[in-house]
Image (cartoon, rainbow, N blue to C red; front, top):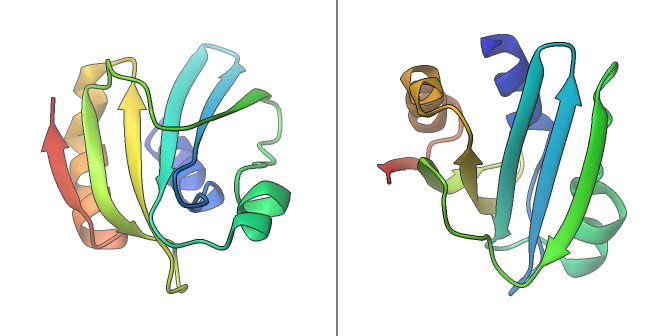
Amino acid sequence: MRYWFALLCSALPLLAHGEACVVHSQGDRLDVKVCQQNQSIPPQLFRDGFCQPQLKGQKVAVEFVAQCPGGSFGVCRNAQVSNQPYRQDIHYYGVSSDANYLKPYCERQSKGVWMAR
């Protein structure tokens, strides 16, 4: 499960200004929902690639919204997309105990600030 979240985090980069992307992924014994709120990605890049994860063996639904909905158990604020200058806020929904490994990933890998809800 930890590997999957790390993969999802790296596969779901940033969003366009004033825009967010809700990604709901389902697979065998897995049901994950995250939302990415853009900080700095160019709009075309966001729409055409960064919010279109390819997760093998997963059914993925993507919805574009103006901002991430409430109800998340935690947010990684100002997360940096791996080896790129782009920043985003990543909202996590679902199992709050996942924060045990999402918080360290946020702070170490994404160089973000974890905020529990």
